[in-house]
Image 1 (cartoon, rainbow, N blue to C red):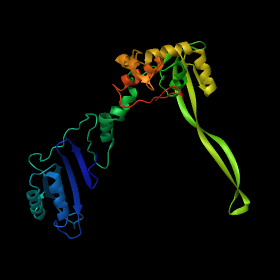
Image 2 (cartoon, rainbow, N blue to C red):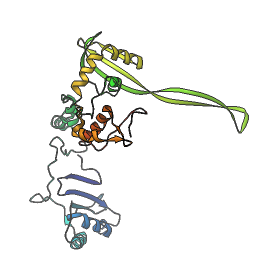
Image 3 (cartoon, rainbow, N blue to C red):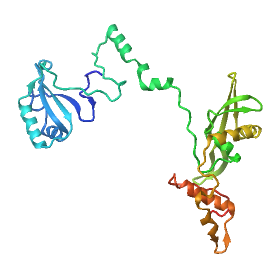
Image 4 (spheres, rainbow, N blue to C red):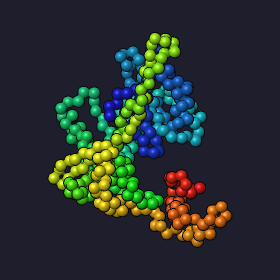
Length: 323
């Protein structure tokens, strides 16, 4: 990092941050570099503040100061404020000190380092910077080379049914699945859904302000379109796009896809009424009708799901007794 900007933050170790502020004015005096408002701000937000005077004059005319503040809290900000004003009146010369006055804290991430370099970098300096801190050492670059971890098993409340296969593939949940197909042999799957604009209707109306002029209104809707990509063992890729191609693939490979779903999804509910079967047997709808077995399983699945989740979406056709 080059010490070039008017304000430079040199790092933060959780206990404080070293901040340098460089200022100048046209009054040939240190007094106007640090206003009372700035001194109050530093006193309120810093553990310690030092005011240094740069030797000599900038451009042979202007005096300059450097305010070094370590971020933190001060039990007596008023005393620190008065000390800042005193140092403002008589700042210490900024010369080489016998011992280091400030310490730049080590970065939290060892791969992220401060690099101090001049404005003009020669060949030797540039080669050293590339060797010591090249882009390949960054976390983002290294992440591209790492093998991704295997996907975790999905734990739905109930297992997807065979009719959900199209939704599973379209949502990309089955990405990376390896199955044996009837037509292409062993393949890896990847699904992608994008929205395609389609013209729903076009209406032509007369302009209310100009009867001789017509206004055309076009209604466009977004329709999801799924592309299923297959990668075979010999590197051949096959892409299937559209609902018809997707349903044809599912129909031809229903058994293999169902086997994948059974291995991938670990449902919470095991169709055991979640331990509340005896309570469900006592329920009477409208005071006299017992619940159907399917209704009992729905309630049991929801009861089991609420043990691990805060909300559950129940979907059912009209007349199935969702209430």
